[in-house]
Image (cartoon, rainbow, N blue to C red; front, top):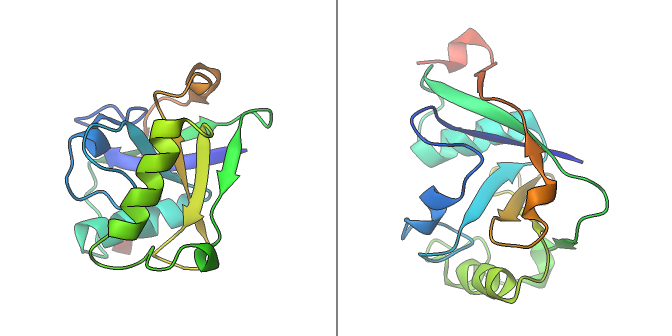
Length: 151
């Protein structure tokens, strides 16, 4: 399995400290080191565009490819299994994600993508899970997309 993460070059991409410091993350509360990624590169692009509220992405963004061995623990959340996962207040999704993280139920949690609910999934990685050291990531690469999508 692979996952893709897009973020600022000024912060480590293979690190959940940004989510841990945020009060606005959808799937985790403050203090929880969760790496947000997507199953597909294009989904990661779309998720980043939604996050920054712009279809034009800064040229300074970078991406990494995360290699996930098939033998690590995985949990999947079907969008129909958690009422309110997509609500603006994020309480249902955050409560679910916090329990998943705190209980260390799995290294990987597949969750529905808000960018394409029911069609695409995001990949959450619990950086404090004992299996985390089994993952590898590429070096950060220059964003690849149609030039019209770049600011």
